[in-house]
Amino acid sequence: MFIRLNGLVPQTALDGDAEGWVLTVDGEVDTPLSLSLDDLKSQFENVTLQLVVECGGNGRAFFQPGSSGNQWTTGAVGCPEWTGVRLADVLKAAGVKSSAVYTGHYGNDVHLSGEEKDTISRGVPIAKAQEPEGLIAWAMNGEDVPALHGFPLRLVIPGYPGSVSQKYLTRIWVRDQVHDGEKMGGYSYRLPAYPVAPGTEVPEEDMVILEEMPVKSLITFPQTGTEVPAGQAAEVRGHAWAGNGDVAAVHVSVDFGRTWQQATLDPAPNRFAWQRWRAQVTPPIAGYYEVWARATDANGVSQPPVSPGWNPRGYGNNLQHRIALIAV
Ligand SMILES: Nc1nc2c(c(=O)[nH]1)N[C@H]1C(S)=C(S)[C@@H](COP(=O)(O)O)O[C@H]1N2
Ligand SMILES: [Mo]
Image: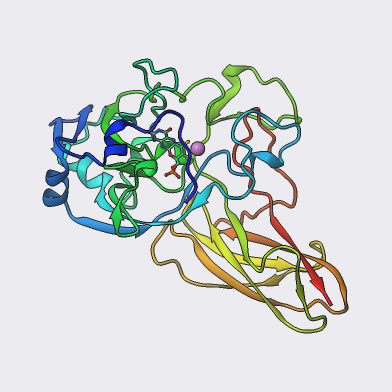
């Protein structure tokens, strides 16, 4: 699991101290709630799901020209098993008013400056928050959420940029407008409203919020540069996921995209989990090959061979992953 922090790990997380932790749900609700960890665990159905968290900037390093931010290549994604309660159930208990538009998320991490201000406070449209897969989680892979991943409580809202999955969660503010917390505005997690040439200076008012993440896949086996026997089948495998929750197919190519073959795609354990895929590829004669992988979502939208949609901060790059294969 990758780690991304915009601020400092709170002392409570470093100490593993969840004593007196309270989650507040307020704003456009009939009944504002103050919930302890025990309240959450005892008053709502406990749910365990495998959910993808992917940083909006995963793949940023492949854009040209580059942009500031973590130079992620392929690694800013993971799919642990999360245990918690449904965000939707907690919102239902609070009674979401018809005036509700968006959520605003808050945690107790400390700004890098040390000053008392939010490091990051993002949110999602109320309909997204009411989907059954969004969790308020206290466990990751069957253990307390680790300090770096949000102990003792975090949101996991799959399909959207990882930044909406607030760690060290203390408050969910139901808003009557699009949330305007830290890193909701300007160029943060925003894309130009129209396609722009790489390097364009886009006016701030032309930027729109990045919501659903695009379909994507990774080749996780074998390691790039592996030698395989020429003329024989070699197994290639990996993961695929989509921001809209449904992967339809994965294809692989060993001839630079001239021809593609369909991979075997395992079913997802639940919606918004990544799916494993595998394929047998046969390099005909000795030489240099590349394996390219391409996932397609349920709408028939698939991954491009080059970086798509350049944007000022380098978000949403789902170009096809490729590895080298040496046939001997
Ligand atoms: N409180 C808090 N939550 C946060 C962040 C943060 O800096 N502070 N970073 C966000 C971003 S940008 C991402 S990509 C994910 C990363 O989650 P992980 O570190 O558990 O992989 O957490 C999100 N939640
Ligand atoms: Mo992120």
